[in-house]
Image (cartoon, protein in one colour):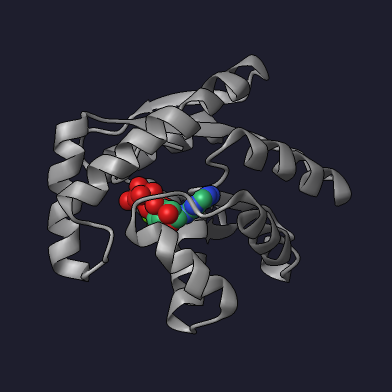
Length: 181
Ligand code: ATP
Ligand code: MG
């Protein structure tokens, strides 16, 4: 977990490589739906381009389906999900359905202004429609309103690990691996 641009995707990819588990990015799954112009993708695009969260019911359906694939049998790392309390509660129900437990929640933190700079740069390179400064500020605001409160939810369960997201990419991966191995 962590604010937009903190490096969730970058780190999740490196960790799934180390641990040989599946990497599930809900942002990537939604962008795949958008490219394929599915019904879900057409709706999701409207929310994403405004920097808003896509409604919980879509995310829960997408995650439930994705977790049925066999590459998740050995475990998985979620990147960008859950982002609301209702998603976290829905995810608990999904896990219960298949006797799974959540091992750990990693929270990455970094300075907000540094993050805006990173995302504007990423937008120029990748052409992601939501990586422009106005939409980025909106996404950050939503993170603090809707997602940050989840840290307390997981902290109370004793699952939360806070990691400093500033520094070299490799260094941050090491910090994360130490807490989860
Ligand atoms: P980064 O991964 O670099 O930290 P990010 O988290 O902002 O950046 P994505 O996770 O790719 O980027 O999400 C992009 C957009 O997709 C979000 O702004 C939101 O509109 C939508 N989205 C992704 N995951 C969810 C979710 N769990 N719930 C609702 N909307 C989501
Ligand atoms: Mg991402």
